[in-house]
Image (cartoon, rainbow, N blue to C red; front, side, top):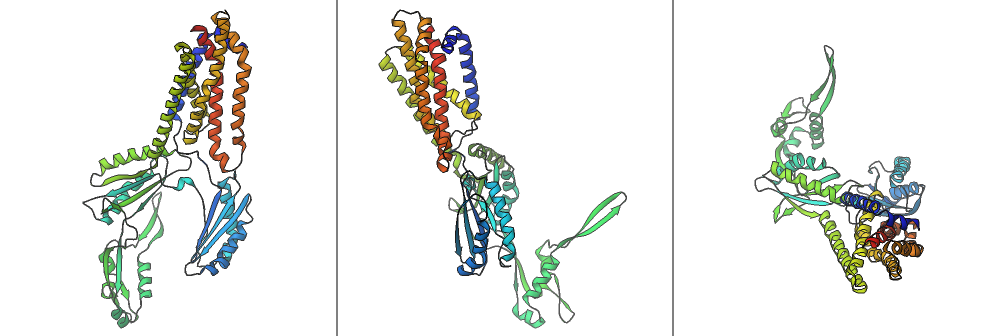
Length: 487
């Protein structure tokens, strides 16, 4: 065929095209995102509502059933499941695969707005959130300090460390747990309250009214219009102690005469320990669609900068999902390289010709490099599924080249010149080679069109095999006959 003849007659053109593919392949390989599994979205959303003090029966009748009736009208609905427990209602909404979950969540909120007025007044507003695999933290950090108390450490983490991590590219949220805060504790004296004829609710109202900052309108100064704010919030504990409390008799008294006011550490509800000592735990979640490895590397780089700016704190990485991903991909790549070397050794054992083996061995890396180009331009990540497909295709990559080379060798034994043998040998079997390759591709391609979670997970696996086999076919009918005509 013309393709084989052109490849043999124009060896420099073929070599230039091969070099272009190699350069593009290496560039694509450095830019392909690394991830553990293909990015997929679960078609599941949850509606959560709380109603303190209500039993399961009241929750089901007053909250769960109205929400279920509203959710039943959402389009692309597959199934509804609900759990009513004491003080809580959870409705699990499952959609058909392929549903746009952003639009589905918006439809759910619109339906919920129609039934909010029928829910109890004391119940919280129903919250809608999607089941997202990205909701799991990709990094867990532990912060500790020998020179600071736990409350001081938490303040430092919230003011200095958390904002810097949140500004890192690809980070969605940063959660801080395990610390404690300083709060103002007011312990009233029951005898004093009874003697002055006031109660705790009266004190609470005065405290709430006094601890307010309100807008005070605007003031004109020349051509400028300035906003005025009345600052009425407490700044120190002593201000709270000296707060004037009006009495029913018309007299006044200070709050410290009615209660003990102290600055204490709040009750610790979560405990985080670093090497046996109390510390602060930081959980970092990545943005949906961002790459886990790149986000982790950016966060770790920012942590190194924070360590230099805040030498008084110690930051340890407890869990890093990127390390597990890189280790898993590294093992798969090493096994694939071993398989490719074994394939070359087996070829040499049967062919017993070093130059023939080198021609076929050349097709393996070039086919893999070309596959990286196709993966990059198809927006496919390098994960366990794509690497698995690539490793599975390695054994098949040499088949086309072996068939072409063996036929070229047959024509050479019949007395044809190197150029004639390369052209005739490749042209005679090119249809058979194409048929064998496309037959193998036809086995995997239907996975791309299957609906459901299976297609979501194995789609990239099937596409990778198809890409690698197409690259192998192209190499076998261009590069192999060209090299055979020279070697």
